Structures are given as structure tokens and as C-alpha cells.
Length: 141
Image (tube, rainbow, N blue to C red; front, side, top):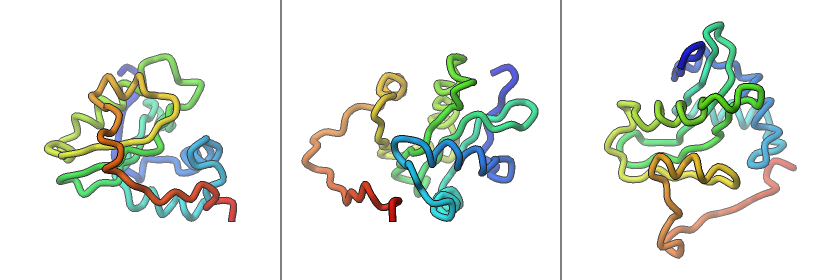
């Protein structure tokens, strides 16, 4: 995409931009900075950068790179939306050589079902086969 590039090199990713967005998001509001650092350090991360190196989008996967991946923290900054960047980022993630052959990739979303359906994501069925430990107030200390 002209004017942008996708990288998996975490040394190019501006943590302050990532943390600022995610700590205000509906899915991780109030996440502590140390927790976010740990999450990024232990994940396979993708960033959308402008040609000048400014981070404008992000996604991370928790994966063994063999059988399973959980896609999380996907965003494009509001001022860069409407240009197809989220779709382009997903194309790069799905096509990445280290993520080929996975048996399952999952995610949770409240508002981007249309985007993910374009890449083959479907509701989990049978839902009764899946369980979770849910602690919605964990970041409120």
C-alpha cells in the first residue's frame, strides 16, 4: 500500500502509540503499562508504519506458529482509517510464512465481524466445546 509498510520487527514499533490506543480500547481499558509490555514481548506482533516510520496500526498473535494462534489488539488509528489498512494488515497476517498450516486461528471482536469474515473467520461452533476464565475487572486492581 503506497506510503505504508507492515513490519514484524518490534524494534520499529512505537510502544507509546500502541499502549495509548489499547489502554483506552473497549477490550483492554486500563491495562497497566507493564502488562502491555509483557503481552507484546511474548507475542508475534505486526505493525503498520507510514514510510516515515510512524506507527498507525497494530496487531498481535499469541501463537506456537505450528497449530494455533489467537489474534488480539488489532487497530488502525482513527485518522488513518478508510484507506483499506485493516484489510491490508489482515492480508499480511494471513499470508505470513510463519503462520501457514495452523489448524485454528481465533479472535474476539465486538465490532469488526465484517472485516474478519472476509478472511474466513466464522463464529465458533459448537460453542459448548469452548470455555474461558473471564476476569473483566482484572486491570482495575
